[in-house]
Image (cartoon, rainbow, N blue to C red; front, top):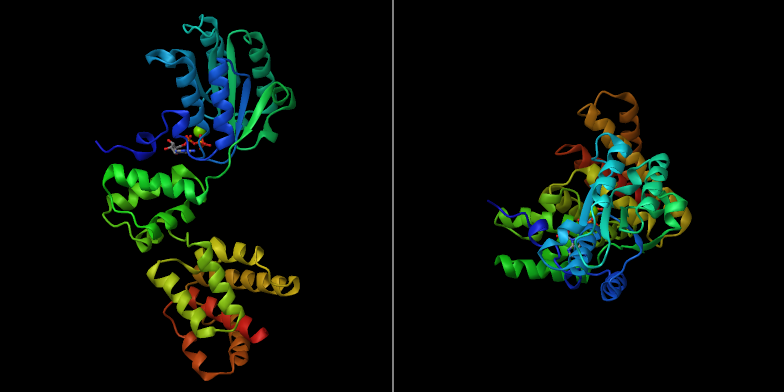
Length: 353
Ligand SMILES: Nc1ncnc2c1ncn2[C@@H]1O[C@H](COP(=O)(O)OP(=O)(O)OP(=O)(O)O)[C@@H](O)[C@H]1O
Ligand SMILES: [Mg+2]
């Protein structure tokens, strides 16, 4: 059977958790004090919320039976809704804790999926068993937890993992699994993961099992997740009017990385433009041009090609006229519509300058 790396490499202790240094310190202090308040773990997916709850319980209760003192519930899985959840909480809380600390932990995953009414009902249950249970609520945004629960809990905010943390963990796993992983590949996985360790490990396992962990294989695997730097470069050279360079860069993304025009626009160009330093008026123009290109690609994709569509053809003619140089004529013959529209867009930006 193949081990799933996200489970195989789930941190087993607080020390093994990457990043989240302040949180780990606080949790260790709870372990030393042998007591915890009710907690909210808030933050994006794959940053260690469930792992931290499990490691905390394991260290607090110790031994083999710590699982007897830990109940994991998932708000969005429990069919029958809040009544079923409250019953499960009651059944678990009624039995005296078998550990020496005198309380048990209930981990409520995806707590922000519960309606406010359900949360209010849960809050009453929480009060009823406060002597012998501590709740840990996991959610993406703590603002979606009702104030009466928030005011009874300590909120710990998990952050996306840094490049250093993800790369370090990937290198460690590569060593354990005896898989090659270059620095470039580790960085490419980080870029695609956006600081989500679960995603990073899933991508790594997928490319490792395909026997090729090269950056281009990674780009292929994640389809459309090119690094931010590449988008910034594409934007910069197209704004500088280096048309040939921009087209080469674009071809590389389209052909070597197997991305579609839409991937490129939605997947990164938009955010590269938004976070770039270009002056506001120019920025607005670029965003409009991107919108136009995106619309054209979608429309072109739906109808296969634009030939015979008078409106699109008129636009193409206008742009063609603007392009002046005859060498651009070759752009208007296929291979691909997306690349055509992106090239039009790029040259458009150049000519507007
Ligand atoms: N901080 C971390 N350090 C080490 N590994 C991590 C970390 N965060 C996540 N992982 C890896 O990703 C897997 C999933 O993490 P975990 O279940 O803790 O995420 P989560 O924050 O609870 O995400 P979700 O919001 O989707 O429930 C873990 O099993 C582990 O392999
Ligand atoms: Mg989780």
